[in-house]
Image 1 (cartoon, helix red, strand yellow):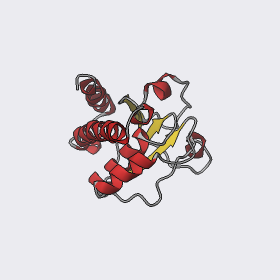
Image 2 (cartoon, helix red, strand yellow):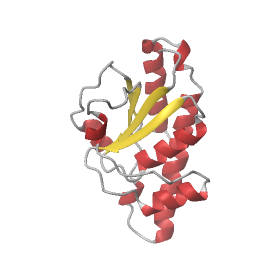
Image 3 (tube, helix red, strand yellow):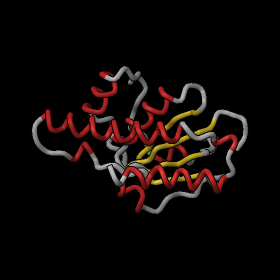
Image 4 (cartoon, rainbow, N blue to C red):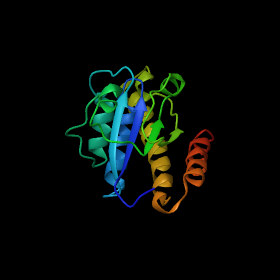
Length: 168
């Protein structure tokens, strides 16, 4: 890794809940270490209202958050990614595009809070759980120093972060 601001993208199918949460959390907790993005393989068109409400409640800036297609990051002139994280099992199982520079990637799957049926209280609880899990992973990621690690060691740590999440 080089001594520059690194680019991170969180990918999910709809880019309306988990990846939006991850984008906002990393953006706000990373300071100036990372440029943070999110995208979907089949974007929902807009962020989930429960995701936006929770982010706002937690003090995150929600202006500018939008559901984006992964194609946006495959175009000429798009930022070169250093890290790619899938946050839903569907996106992880889809054929992924080739990324220039072979970025470090990881799967940090979290159950989809947008899929929860029930009362608004049930839905808010599901989003809170997803937020807490994603925040824990991001904080573990931020404890790493990618500028000082070789790619193999960094990949090992990224995989461990994803594996730990399955025991929550």
